[in-house]
Image (cartoon, rainbow, N blue to C red):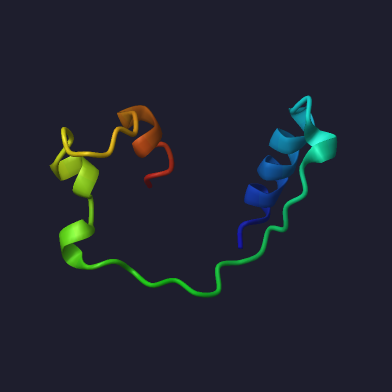
Length: 63
């Protein structure tokens, strides 16, 4: 787990006006199952498909 991710999450929550109402637990990912190959990069390959996530958000965390 990258400690910077936890720090960024804490800062984001603290800056919200409803921070006192938010309770989250951040843990390392422990159970990950990669989806079938046909689903990899689906929204990039089929941009006009049924999902309507803005492209800027879709690729926000892509390395």
